Length: 133
Image (cartoon, rainbow, N blue to C red; front, top):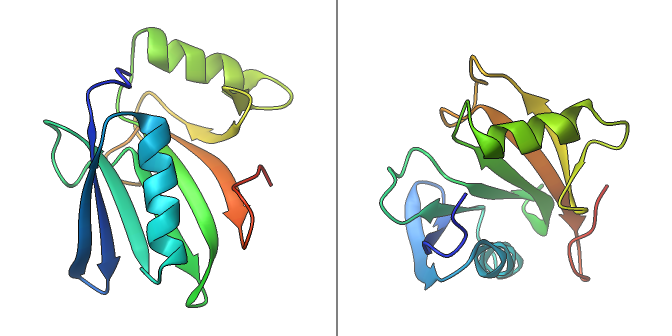
């Protein structure tokens, strides 16, 4: 994944867009959607520039209406070096990708979320910074 392509970050309350922010990198997008959830959004998505809104790379959800939730990363390729990297992580004992993300599902045929082929989970957060669960 080209992490320098830029990302649109959107915060939602219900189906209404609460905020739109542009970031340069995946790491910045991760921080931004985490901030959006902590600021009261029910969900927040990061979509890579040039990709459809239905294919977010990152999705965060508040849990029980409070600023605690789960941050998910989605893989939108079913072949190539990035898929191979996810597959190595998925088949490893720790399932860690980039020492931070735990790959929870991966299938070249696709998974049932956002038209993706893989899903990794980063964090449950509260007042602190994201951490692996």
